[in-house]
Image (cartoon, rainbow, N blue to C red; front, side):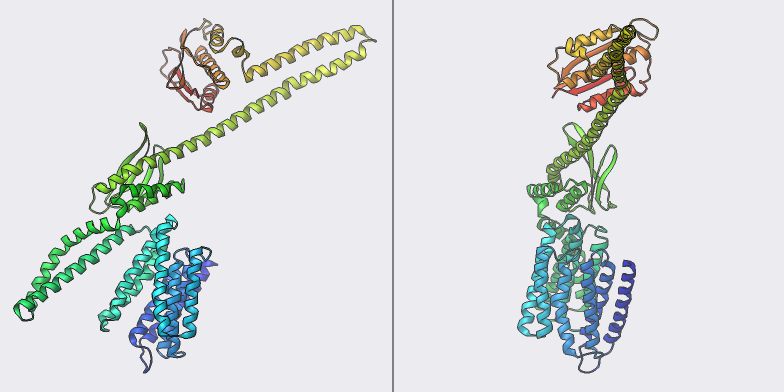
Length: 610
């Protein structure tokens, strides 16, 4: 449906453009001048194309652009005398200039009337449009509206660039660059002689605005707009300086010689000015960098601005966009050992520069930043900013990785708890439950036979005693599964010594366990159970699978962590095959925030003491 609507809009705009083009070629007496009709037709062409191409991604802006195009086409038709009167064209042109076109600029790219500043701007511009339609070309109103409307547009665009969504700022800068350049060219041409060249330049300038809007909406990252903006300013300034130099030298030659310079003399001066154009431009590039990229010159301001952007979102893409905005970079990307994390911008042909992101001595990721034309590495002012923002970015990436690990750990915790509950449910339902049910039935039967058949009742009571003993054993087994009683009876180290005396190898010989334990602080109940289960499971694996009569167990503390090491001293060089036992040990360590590492015949575990 949307695609069909776009086709209909395009067809309608094409029809109006055809009529406007035909109207701009005719010049009946008493109508608008050719330049006015030509400008209206060009406006209709540019803004109709912008509206059709942008209406799906920026609906309100696209609709207003099409309204500007329709108004321009109608002005061309009215000005040619095809329909209505010329006064109507004057009013419609004024409505377009002070209401429709500024409203489209205010709503670019995705502004809605729900935003307070956009709603206020649209109310004022709408009032201008109504007054222009009613009063017509009133000198007092024309002066007021044509001064106020641009100020409103500049204020809203500035607010969008400074405070708007990060992902829209490049689009707004493209639009501001195109519209600003268009205005700077069209206004001076309006006061010059109306020649074919001036008309062609004006037509091109009128098309720059809508073209920049299309680029901003559909391809905002086709080129680094901030670099384009700075370089455009430096080129314009260099051109102005060079032209001024040419005119000044020509005037000085005329004053000193008392005659007009010849064509050869002027050509020689022009060649000299062309030679000095490149050095002037390079100098002005540096000057414009310092004037327009003030954040890069002031590292503290740049770091503060990046920190503000980083605090508003945990999305790494937003962080990279904020970094690019602060340093005016064409490209930035984050990657870790697992692969790419996020990127922003288009990787330039000049290449990238890689920076490690470290938290302490641990490298958590790498940051690749795009180089600007002519650069082999970050500029000195960029390095000063990077030294301040890279640690914050590293902490953000590290926090994101920790959050992901925490989510995964929580999932393991939930899964382990659910497994324990399911195991208890099965043990109670399949073991203890039927036993207690049998005890109840047997006690009822014994009570019924105690008077009529005492011997049978006695036999039932004997069987009942056996069933109760089995039930008690089941209860003890369940309790042992939750927490071994031996830990409460003798403690962790004696419990491990007691367990190690009952271990035999696959050949039937006793496994010698050499237990080395340094003085330990008071351990939490969960830590004691985890260490006991891990060590006993590891020793069981040694007894079953290792070809060694000796196993070493070392338990100690270092840097606030409990360290457990089990080694079988076996001749095997292959690592232990992962199975239920190893998985159980790993889960117990990781549930307490620890680490688990298994190699060829050895297990190493570290668990935080706090």
